[in-house]
Image (cartoon, rainbow, N blue to C red; front, top):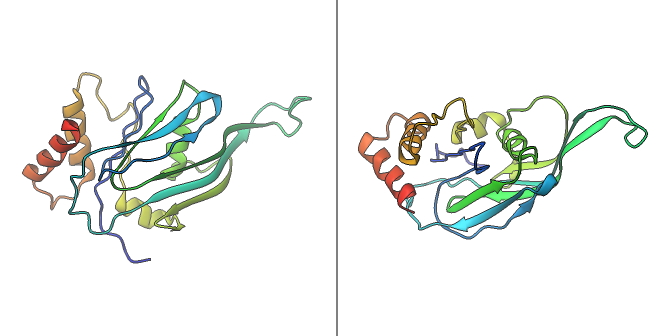
Length: 188
């Protein structure tokens, strides 16, 4: 796989709304099921980022995650399944929203995709551009905005997007370009 450039990428997870957003070019996406009633759905946006030279596609298939739980007669292994065979895909041009009630696995899914979980039993595949995800490469081309620690409740959507863009884009991107990109995403 060729070395990807630093591609604009932003994720937001709001505890109140249960949304995770990924920005890029427009193309309809597919949904994937989460346990406890959660789901992900792709929605089209207008194409705005023609300057992405090395687009990255993040995909996951049959992703399962379990942690230690209480051993019972019904669960002799004592494992608690958090995610069960979840599959999905995020690509430039897709707006992906992962929605569901509290405890349905939204944050766990994003944490697994971002390689922020090091314990528990994980199975399935996570790929970047069709190849197994390599942590160093993945972190060079993506950014993760945490659900509440980095976001201020008093910020508007526009202010939140500006802050996320300034934190995640390289210093070589001008303030005017950041403003233009944020405005384009918010306008959609």
